[in-house]
Each structure stands twice: as structure tokens, then as C-alpha cells.
Length: 324
Image (cartoon, rainbow, N blue to C red; front, side, top):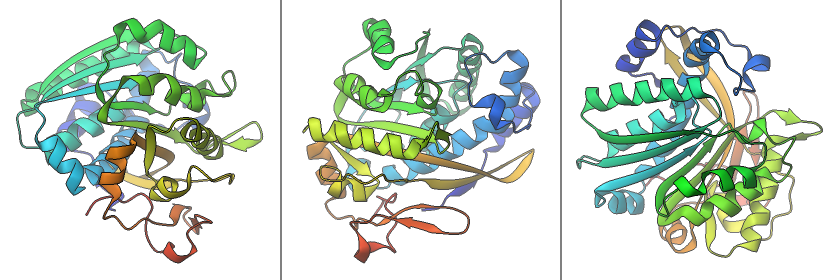
């Protein structure tokens, strides 16, 4: 799986010239994004938006090259996306560009974006409009400003706006902002929002790899999703593929992660590290992975690699790769 890319030239121009984006990494400031002001949003656009774009594009580009996924989505005329904690839209743009590059049919794309920062949502709407015009993509976007401290509170406040058949339900780097207040946030996200997932849809949880109190977020995420799967026989993980095989029995304190690199006008090979799981309904998951070599490589640093303890014989296979 290629894990680096260049930001498209149109996005480079849009972000850094027209929207005055700035590259100024400051993780201690930008690990909480609900209070960003207009100047902060410009820094976020130039620093963290390209990273989110690259992560999302590379994840979905690989997924869409799976023969089963490719066939199903080639036959669809309409795509419904729910983006929770959408921010200014880096992860959403990555998905939109991956759809554009993999499916030639003239898709109608409906997006519902939720966030607790009004300025970020305004920026998201501007960017999506310009992308829609530039690439002649039919994108109907609606956004809703909702503040919350708990996932069940978020669901209660948003369910009147929700459809029941989303093809993609995404949360990217949002739950880390509330996990100290909502200790079961990953579990509850799956519990509540999977109700609105279509039969061949994907629920995607992406987060940073930082430590909260005494435990790393990848460990919290994996533990809670495994618990959810054990209590829900309708959904299965497809990525990492090792989790698909062992999540019902796994009790490991497992740290999974992946590294991505993006180059843009202000920075070459900017590195981001994330953890993520992708779930879908069990029957579709089994079809997608039927002929896929499932892997034991579940993470890496710049110096070493991490492996699934259940898959000693598949260490050389990337558990994040599902393309054929």
C-alpha cells in the first residue's frame, strides 16, 4: 500500500493562495479544535488538513481497489456520507477524491457534516463547493453545528437530521477530544451510529496515537471496538484484517497504527501517525475479504514494526491492505 502522496495542485492553490493557509505545526494547541478562531483555522488548513486528506485518500483508494467493493460501488448512482467531527474537511476531501479517481460513473454524492466549530464548517462548505465546480462532481452538502460532551448526547441531538442508509460514516480525530469526559466513546459511537449504516456501508473510526492519562488511544479504540463486536453479531472489522479474524476472542492491549506522508507547497513528506478500524456488515465483510491474504503487520514506527500476536505466520502481510 502506497503511503505517501502529493497534495493535488488545485488543493495546493486553494488552501495556500486563496484561503491563506499556513504551515505551523503545534500539536499541543491543535489536539483540541472546537475553540479555533479564524486565524487558527488557517494554520489548521495548512498543517493538519493535508495530513487528513492524505490519510483518508490512501485508506479509501486501497479499499476501492478491492474487487468486491469496486463492483458494488460501480453500480451505485448515489453515495451518502455522514462525517461526524468534520472540521474543515480534510478527511472528507480525501474520500471525495478517492471516489472521483476510482468510479467513472456520474455519482450524486450527499454529505451531512457535523461539527462543534462553526468557522470550520463554513470553511468546509467553501472548499466542497469549489471542488464540486472544478471537477463537475454532484455534491449536495448539508452541515449542522452541534456541541456535545458525550456520544449518546451527540446522537440524541443529531438523530432527527440523520438518514438511515449512509454508505460511509466517518469520525476522524474527533473522539480524542472527548475521551476524557466520555470513557466509552468508541464503543458508543459504534453502538449508536451503526444504526444508520447501509448494508454495504462502512463505518470508519480514525484517531491520533497519543496517550490519554495512562493509556494510548489505539489501545482504547481497539479494546472498545472488540467489545462492541462481541456484543453485536451484525458487524465485522475489515481493516485491520487480523482483527477480522480474531476480534471476537481478542483480549490483547493492542497498539495498531499506520504511517502516512504528504507533500504540499509548504512541506515535503510531512508525516502523520494514526490508528483506525473500518467496519461493515458481516456478510459484506466476509465477501470483501474472501480472497484477501490477511496480515499480521498491524503497525510501525520509523524504526520498528508491530505484529498481531495471533498471526505469527503472516508477519510480512500488511493488515491494512485489502486491494487485490
